[in-house]
Length: 296
Image 1: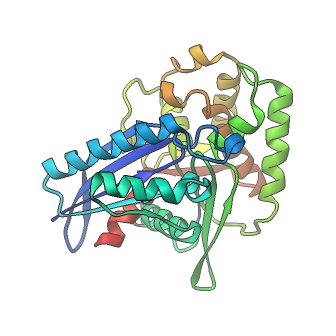
Image 2: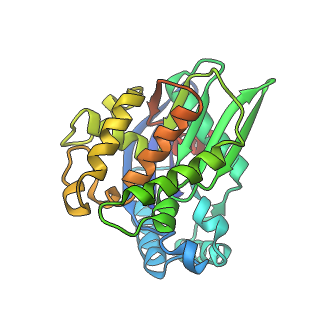
């Protein structure tokens, strides 16, 4: 049987279809559309009108794709931006009416659980691992403790931090000092230590692609790749050394992500520093995979 999931994120709409059996989930189609649903949310408190239109168009396209692939079950879920926007619930209802499909806004703890399950099952994680999912609006941290999953959702999203702090191109030293201080302050509420760290999300996969100098993205090479603190620091310096138009031309960088990637890379580096870790494992298995497991 074939299942599919659509993730309505702050920065992008993502689609995953897979062949599902009792013992495995085998992806057959994965796509992403950058829609910037959460653009301007910090300032206005509502979703971007252009972002809503782009998101609706992407969802319609992905539903049609799911039908063409013979998908039997489909799950559509909104996360950080739709949770926080004053018009998030209204947009979910409108999108549901437009598509004829249920559109759910999931809670932070459900988002964290699905992200952890997607990473854990695709990477076959050790029993003790800290997973972080860095999105556009927030960053979820999930780890096992005393037989249960614990999580924290912090306002460390790449779109959020860029809109909050960055006014220069490339970002100035002072702007990045402000971001670094903000990140360090929020991370101080977390206590788990001594676990392998797994990173999920477009920032982490982009850093891996940059390190491998990919001109065409290959998720099989990215999944399970080890990013060291030195690699992240080096790539962040590259990102901060050039203006946006040149940043988007760096091998491994998606042009649609080039403006928010420096802030995201800084967050990743700060996470490793805070947990006194020298590296992290990159996972392509994320909330989309977790959504498919929830359908199964």
